[in-house]
Image (cartoon, rainbow, N blue to C red; front, side):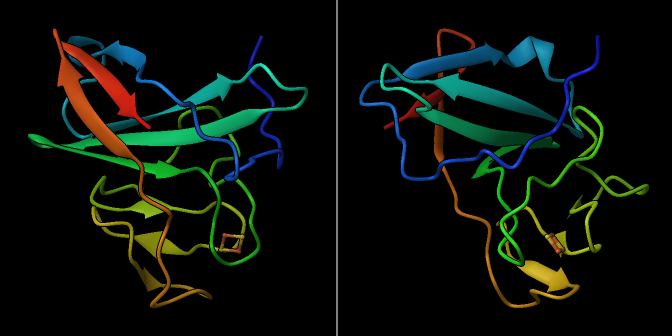
Amino acid sequence: MPKIPTNKTRPDYWPDEQRALCALDALPEDTARGFTLIGNAPDARLDVIVWRAGDRLSGFVNKCPHMGLPLETFPDRFLTATGDALICSAHGAQFDAAGKCFAGPCKGQNLKPVTLKLVDGMITLCP
Ligand code: FES
């Protein structure tokens, strides 16, 4: 059953310890994938995007700076057709690998970055 996108991203929730997201090998180069972290408090939730652009890993809160919506309409469909930028499906904002919007209604604004590191081959979100 496909994941239904929601606008329940809560950027005020951050895990207080490292959280493994997936194996690096499970995220091919030049792809992006979404993850949802659930906390202990009711409704504690953080949606993040991990983009592996070549050998660079970038991570962002999945919340568009334009209207606060998640970027994707369909699961893990975060990239433009050319695969060189993230795109928000709502109004077409495009973001570079640093999370900066370079085209669209929030040009000049940024996705909120998250800190990622590799731990034993696992892409790990750091608090
Ligand atoms: S909500 Fe993303 S471009 Fe409008």
